[in-house]
Image 1 (cartoon, rainbow, N blue to C red):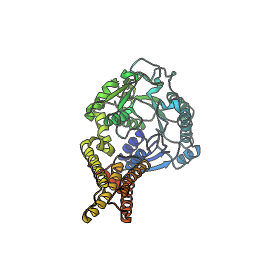
Image 2 (image 1 turned 90 degrees about the horizontal axis):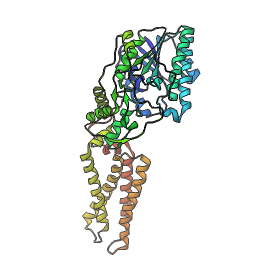
Image 3 (image 1 turned 180 degrees about the vertical axis):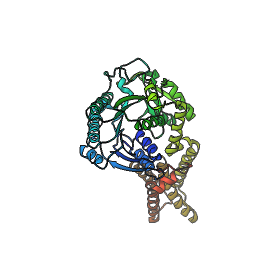
Image 4 (image 1 turned 180 degrees about the horizontal axis):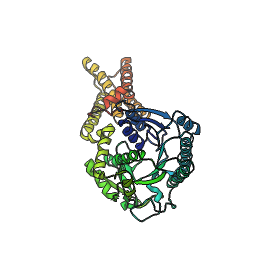
Length: 452
């Protein structure tokens, strides 16, 4: 099959495209690679899709679905057997801060997808909706036939609009369309703005993690592989129009979710208990009987299993995490650096003239000390600009201490000393500001970050 996947560099889009390629489909991905979160994470996902190991073929079109002409060009490239629209501006809370982004991507963008499918005879249209459409409903589990006319966030309202728009196009133009209401998706390669990502990062860093409504929340956490399995089964079973829940059909308390993360990390969390945030709901749970009846599939990955898989991926993907956990070696590295610094300061303050052989060693010690200082700040992962400013300041301090001795007896000015210091500073800056310096600074990491 030739399948269009919008949002292909996103969390769910990446996993879906991977699955479709593995079964031999041709996937045309569309993504604008916006900076809502770390673009390097999106690039890493794309690198895996392009690695050529799968049976199918992958092509990326870098475009915004809100760009009408760009979407028309994509649909004009050839007929699609199925279209899966996952491109959207996600996030309940961000919709309060930047509402226009949600109208552009989720409403205007989706209209362009519908128009493309209509005018170019595309096959089954599958599109992402959300459990947030249930809004003020309190009767659990949520069923597809419940009223969804009371959303409490603009994000939910735009997704409800998608369902209504798709229904009208399906009715008017005979487009087979299926909407999928996702329930709190999590897993490897997830978005950094999601709770699991934030909690894992915060716990490893020893920071307090924000827990809203003081932890009195319930979610139906759904592992991403279950979401993808549901999407694939739906793609292969087109129908006039329908909406399905995709969730794990399990109520999981937020505090139980945090305990699962603690267990996977082997580290206890520090909690910052906060009030409920605007736009949030207290509880969700999916009734997935309709999905099971139509496809024979029911998501069932336990939270403990899914969280463990995410933590394993996180530790593999982020070398900085391995540095945090290599605490003893890191402390030894820093202590040795400070040892060099104090040694040089001590030698600089020594008034007695040093024997000739020691003078050479003294100059060599300066070079090593300055270089070590630079490497130390490279290892601390400061931004390059800040790193170099601090390094310059420390070098100036060292040079000042040395030349202050010109005012003391037994010391004379020598141009060789200036050359010595200049060389030391140059070597240190080169090591600190280049990949060589960064590589040397990470000697306490057993493995480097994978390229994909």
